[in-house]
Length: 181
Image 1 (cartoon, helix red, strand yellow):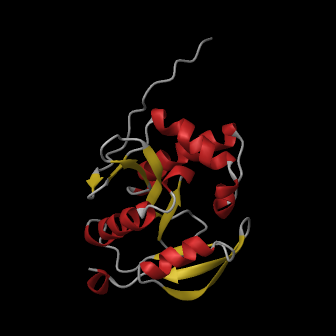
Image 2 (cartoon, rainbow, N blue to C red):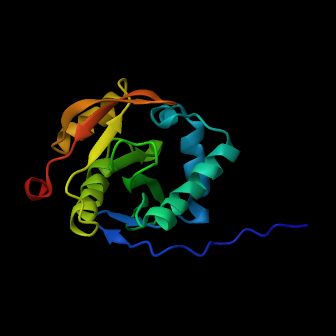
């Protein structure tokens, strides 16, 4: 039996454009960039590194979250070239204490303000479209870059969440919708 790979039938995932970025549905053509991120030491903040097979399961979960929750993380792409740069957006895994604005930026996009620009757009989507009244972001205690981004987004420390697999995660509370504008 030969298995032909194709673009999946996706749940309704909106497209959000910013000055430099396009937040859109993940595509099979994004998988190699995502798998490279998952295999790299950069993925340690999200439990990695992961094998290519595990990366595929995680990639499929990006789309599955949209189907099950009605929202999820977007593939962040360069607006001009559509090249994948990372994964950012609202999510709420079943074991999470509350909904999160999450971000992971691929190595070649680091240091260009991509995570900040994408996270602002994702937070706006969560507050204005999903009508969230609050959001958090969780970071590993040693992920200083993500903590700096949380501060830049106006987040404040709000405790620690003990995750059964990832251990202690710092909780960063986003400004309320009216203060985040």
